[in-house]
Length: 194
Image (cartoon, rainbow, N blue to C red; front, side, top):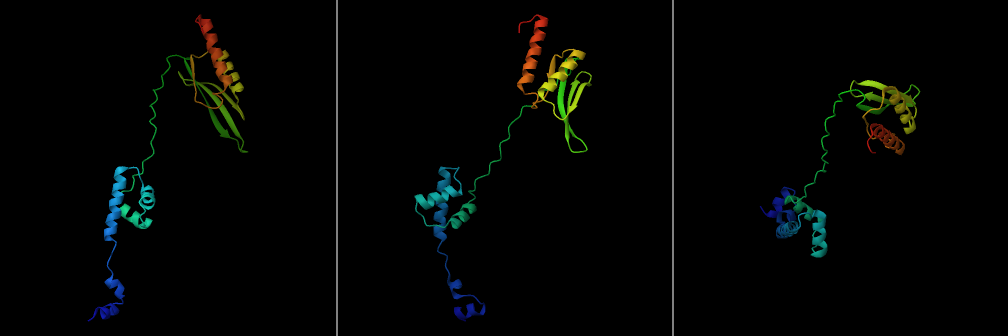
């Protein structure tokens, strides 16, 4: 049986039977070029390699073909994971030995039945976990926080330290100036220079 008759019986075109791949040598040349490019500069990805071959070396190779060989050679750059910042482990909280040594203050949020949100300002003595004051309102600016703290100080005395987070009410200049004034008054009463 002739080749033509055999191809016709299997419904194959004779050009497919006689096809000889001419790209094997060229594929090896592409692979060598890619390996050379990535060895000299390891941070080059596929895009830079393709542009260098096309523009600098004037090679007419198709980008799909270059990418296929690039993947077969496993030259794909490893995707670097995002660097996580190392946070220092915070020091354990010191347990106060007496009352009025450390107070903690913080805000809480809640919502009324009609949808309006309210804020609660809480002050707690860390020694015995006693609630020293709770202020509830729709808005609690720094002046209101200072007024509440002054009332608690009149009733309980001054604490040695006050612990808080960085809410907007705590980082205002008004509260900072109040705390500096309180410290200077305490140092004057103890006879220490400010």
